[in-house]
Image 1 (spheres, helix red, strand yellow):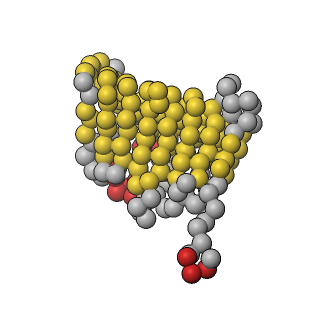
Image 2: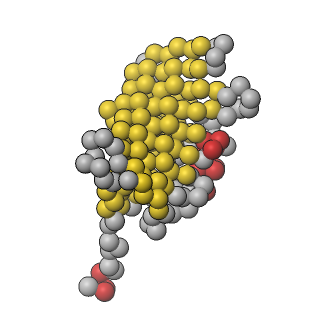
Image 3: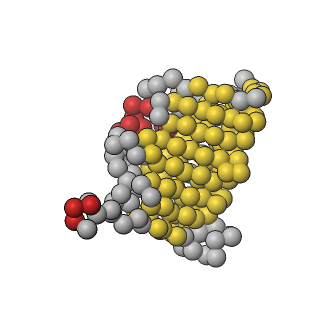
Length: 163
């Protein structure tokens, strides 16, 4: 089952555009590189930061596209985590067994026990693809998800003077 939607509670992510102009800092206990194939591997307690964006994982591979300067980040962990602040300061959080972040395509694909959370609402599935530019996502059930995806929408809180 495939679900495509735009969560009304997900705010503008132009902060993501600002983050792309920031330097990338990668910290890990170990690293290795395959310069010929343009693949860098970071292992053990990997933390990547770029502006408000943070990725935490056990292993991250950074694959450089030979045709242009685009890079693909593949993070794996139990779970691997991605967090970024939106313009209004609200964090968007993604976690899964694997996170594939493609800033050049404005996409994040999370696979295996995938969860996307923002402002108390969340989407769960086997695979979630999120476009940081259009703010749209699609979710698919995985083999261990009883054949369904799940969305939990948090109700808006009433102002105290309205109660």
